[in-house]
Image (cartoon, rainbow, N blue to C red; front, side):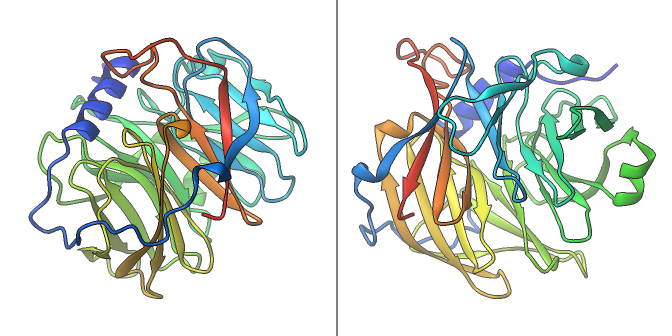
Length: 330
C-alpha cells in the first residue's frame, strides 16, 4: 500500500514550509532591491473558474490552440478556458479516473495534457477526446508528494517530489506503454525530511533542468548530458516560497512566490548556471499565487486563495470568486 499525505495535509505542510523557510548555507543570494518593481495596476482578471471551493493550483497553456487548463487542488477538477472567454468550463470533472486533487499541469507539443496528482503520480490525457492515454504511479512506502513537471524537446517528462527530493522521469517509450511506476531519475541534495522541490522547468534545447527548493530558496540545476548536479548562482535575491516556474526561450525565468504574494522575473545565463533578478511584483491581489504561464507578452497567474478556508491554516477568511490573473509587464 502506498504511503502519502492527504491532499489537504500535504498542502498545509507545503504552506508551513514556505512560511518558515530558512536560508540554505549554499545559497548565493544578495539582499533584495527595489529594482524593476512593477505597479499593482498591471494585475487584472483573465477569466473566472466556476465553483465555490476550487482552490486552483496548476496551469498550462496549449501553444497550438491557445486553450488554458487549470487544475483544482481541492477535488481534481480540470478546467479549460478558451481564448477570449471570460469563464472557464469543466474539462475533466472531479473524480475522473479516481483523481481527487491536481497539482502540476503541462500540455506537450502533441496536445497531450499531463496532470500530476500529489497522492498517486501523473496521468496523460488527449485534449481532443478527453481520453486518458497513460498513467504512472509512485512506488514504495516512503511518504511522497508529486508536485510539478516539465517536458523536454525529446518528449521526456520530469516531475518533482517535494517530500523525497526526487525528480522522476517518464520517457516517450514508457509513455507509449501506457502505465508503470514513476522511475526516479535524480535525487537532489536537499535537507532530509524537508518540504523542498516544487516548480521545475527545462532548457528549450534539452540540455538541463532547473528545479526550485521552496524552503531553502535555491535553484538546482541538473545537467541532462552528464547528470551533474549544481546550484544556480542567484544575483539580487533568493527563491524562498517559490512555487511555480515559467521559462521563456529568451532565458527569462518567471517565478510565483506563494505566501508572500510575489512574482519575480530573472534573466538566466545561456548555460543556466546564473540568474539575475530584474523585476519584482508584490501585491495582495495575487491571492497566494501558485503557478504561472507566459505567452505572447502576457503572464497568467493562478490565484489559489489557499489561505481562505483552503489547505493553509489558520484560515484568514472566506474565498471570493476564484480567478486567474493576467499580469502585464512582468
